[in-house]
Amino acid sequence: MTSKAKKSWTIDDAAALYGIRDWGGGFFDLAENGDVTVKARFNGKEVAVSLMEIVAGIEERGHGMPVLLRVENLLDARIALLNETFRAAIAKAGYRGEYRGVFPVKVNQQAHVIEEIIRFGAPYGHGLEAGSKAELVLALAALHEDALLICNGYKDQEFIDLGLWARKLGYRCFFVIESPSELPIILERSRALGIRPLIGARVKVSAKVGGLWTETSGDRSSFGLSTTQLIAVVDTLKSEGMLDTLQLLHCHLGSQIPDIQDIRIGVQEACRYYADLVREGAPMAYLDLGGGLAVDYMGARANHVHSQNYSLDEYCSDIVEVVMTTLDPQEIAHPHIVTESGRATVAYASMLLFNVLDVMHFEAAPLPEAPPEGAHELVKNLFAVMGNLAAADLQESYNDALYYRDEIRDLFKRGQVNLRERSLAENVFLSIAQHIAARLDALAKIPTGLSDLRESLADIYYGNFSVFQSLPDTWAIGQVFPVVPLHRHDERPTREGIISDLTCDCDGKLDAFIAGSGERKTLPLHPLRPEEEYYLGVFLMGAYQETLGDLHNLFGDTHVISVRINENGGFDVIKEISGDTIADVLSYVEYNPQTLFDGFRDTAEAAVRKGKITVGERQRILEDFSASLRGYTYYER
Ligand SMILES: *Cc1c(COP(=O)(O)O)cnc(C)c1O
Image (cartoon, rainbow, N blue to C red):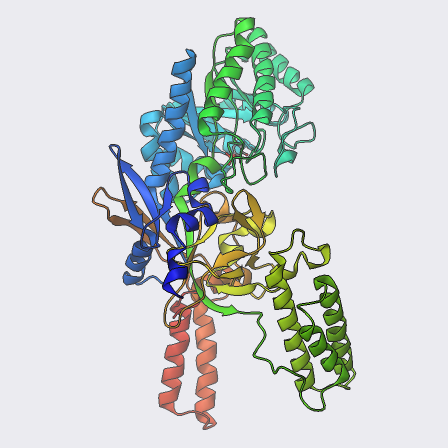
């Protein structure tokens, strides 16, 4: 690259291209040397650490890529921000209830994440939401009594007994009734154990919200009570003399709600339910608005499934305002506001870091000016199209070239054109396609027949990771995460590519990206350099990805490294969890690694007997086999 080309590219250009300052939540930026940095604040002073330095530190400690990196400071900062922002909104509005956040365990159940949330959330009384017995068990073991513990999900007798004992121990454990069948068991177990429960009622809010999770809201939502069922619950509690246990109203509009207007309408409806439960005589105290606070994966601040058209400030102050303006005229006391923000709490703190193993280019090899002597008529036609490109209509040239190429392919199948002829034709076609693609930018309007041409010529970068293990939502629900090179941002990225993972599955790829305020099908990338690793990061992936992942092609858990940025501009490694070994993943699918080894040793011994290998070779082969069993499931350099 000439120095002039280099000068015309700045760090700010790179930051804008990848949108890092838009989606980064103030946590990510670029350094002058071109590295991505992660930032933390200490008493107002900002410290930035290069992710490349963290990668080097991880590799020096013996962990190869890919790695799931957690930066604890980011989790702490998000919990503090959520609580402080609600507190500020409450103070500003003169609201007379408190904010009591809970973290929904299903969003990231990893012990270290939950520990950190509990530890850092303690001063705010940040609690947990459990949706299953297993989640309740881990919550009880971790939580302190004054924090809320909200139990959603289907509850059997065992679940209920455990929650009732928790009440006796002093936990503020609420059973949220999701279906009418739960109440009789709760009442029966409460009588049997002599413990009074705390009860919440989950209602279906009829307002439909936009985004990927519209199913969670509306009449057909599988969770929550209908109005008829809610009245039946109230009547049963009254007749059992238990109405005093009903203290919480719960609703959950869905996850990643992009439009603040939907949130306002949902909260308003929830307040109507709340007010009427108060009038029914229940000593209501908590209004639980569930999750839904979005993460702006695109950084577009827009009403788009991967974005949000509101800030955290707006979210908090709008909720406080809507609750006040709905309840005040009815002279209903202000409830404590509970939210169950999962995604917005943990997304920022985790990122997947991986190296690129190889690139496939779709580029023509050097071509002769004219068709070689004796070339096939169709090949000559292709050369003619190429020679005429400057003067001809682009769409027409492309159609012609495509026609001749497909004819050649047909003839090849019928044995009338040989491999060298077909290869030449393919190469000329590629060259024509590239020329056309290069000229599309100059057109006022790209012809519809050519709209996918650039994507079809994009490079494929092979990443050392598995989409199915580490980023399942990209495959399952079309989630888009920001993907950014970790370094070389002082250099203009001259390639366009998609990223393919290690699995032998055509769904194992990243081919939807974020650009400015929209989506794009290819990502600007740097050309690989010989003898130098190229590292990429997938950001904002701390929510939902860690346990939804599967073992496709038996790629196992990645290494997980937790670091904490320190005041001196360095970082401390807090926790290292080695990823699955090959023996680990084989045992998950019911193989016994020892049996496998024994079987292979028998094969090797038989080969010695037959004289195929020596005893020395047998030893080396067995050592390699057993090293493989102990090895990482990903590509190791
Ligand atoms: C999944 C879930 C949440 C978390 O929602 P986010 O959008 O991630 O904040 C909260 N509450 C309930 C009941 C849920 O099912």
